[in-house]
Amino acid sequence: MQRIAVAGIQHETNTFASMPTTMAHFIEADAWPGLTQGEAVFAAVAGANLPLAGAIAALEADGLHVLPLLWASANPSGRVEDAAFEALWAMFELALLNAGPFDGVYLDLHGALVTERYDDGDGEWLRRTRALLGEQIPIVASLDFHANVSPLMVKSASALVGYRSYPHVDMAETGARAVGLLQRLLVGEQLHSAFVQLPFLISMPWQCSLIEPVARLMQEAEQAEVGDIVSVSFFPGFPLADVADGGPAVLVYAHQADVAQGVAAALARAVESAEAEFDGRLWQSHAALEYAREHARAGHTIVLADTCDNPGGGAGSDAAGIIVDCLSAQMPAVVLGILCDPATAKAAHVAGVGAVLHRAIGRADCSAYGEWKVAGLGNGQFAATGPFYSGCQMDLGQMARLEYQGVTVLVSSRKQQAADQAMFRHLGVEPSEVPVLILKSSVHFRADFGAIAAEILVVEADGEHVADLSRLQYRVCKRRPASRAKAKDL
Image (cartoon, rainbow, N blue to C red; front, side):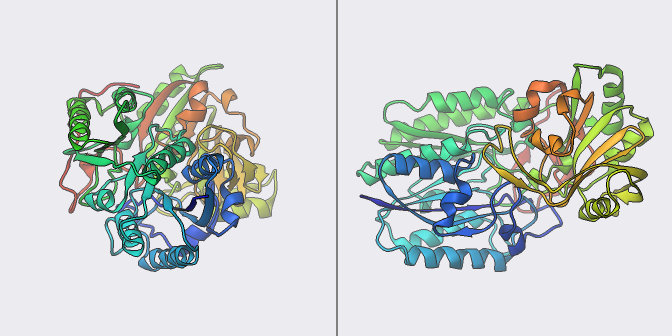
């Protein structure tokens, strides 16, 4: 029986975000499990929509012996502290050295991890792993849809494969696809890679695979996997990392080098031809709220995606500017989630249901003052029900439902993007019955909220998950933002 070592190390680093990522962020659980080592990894990820879970299931189904080493993830935020990166590497290295003989390695990586020292954290992780194991043992990794793939990553790994969906509903499936490549390598197949980096950056809201042009480009990638072409990945990239290899890329593996090169070049041309389509309307909050007031009605829920404060891309999920706008606009019935404000959540629990909190909510420089009635409380522990967080047990700390002048705000103690309706139901809100929903998310919300949304407006408000890339000052990344086409609604 062949033995396969597996591990997951996930972080999407927004180098423009002010909050550094510490070891504590990897240790604590949120939507995903906290730091886990050894055999406990099996239970931690079992049944979840995570690449590592899908890979383990595929390996076991094929009769391979799985050696779980490590699971570590932290919510997207600023650069990972070097101390945290080195501590995680030390755990992984020791576990790898103590695992005994093994035949291959599977890694669940993100592809956009940046540390204080390493702009290409995933590349460094793969480089060290290769240096430790030598050239004979195959190392295969799955990468996030938003991976900033580098030449070092491609050189150090035997194969890399990316998600095909955003919202990422195929994470577990991608882990299984990566195992398929690993098994090819284990039986001696020779794979040749072709790697192309595109010359522009794609803003996050327009990377959605449910809309054009990404929908057809991903279909093109999938349909190209025929015959000797064993893997085709298009990575739209993570544009909020100011690194040399930030941006979209195409990566192909085939049995013949010239075939791989031809497929990669064709897909890269298709992506370049679609450049002007990577655009859409960014609504200012006052205009979006005015539109929502006029058009929302029973059975016609309008979703406002508060994309710039999306914690899934490194923002704090704590900006209340859009809440101030709601109060000023005297919106009759609007629900916002999820505002991360642990102090307010704690105060609500101390005061109890029915109490009124006279306080500003949100971060100090972007808060909303009001006489907030505590309408509901929760411990933040519940099972996710939507396809993106499928199989995950949420742990968001103390939560509260606050109400003031027709505005309802759902508050958590740990940041997590509003991409699952269970977050709202945990606090007594049925999303389908709300005329206007404001979700601190960019795209992932579409997986669970898309079916109840009559209209979706992408809103540009406060936050460090910037949607208009022309506002950012890139110093290292030399790629330009995708050229803006005529604004259009989604």
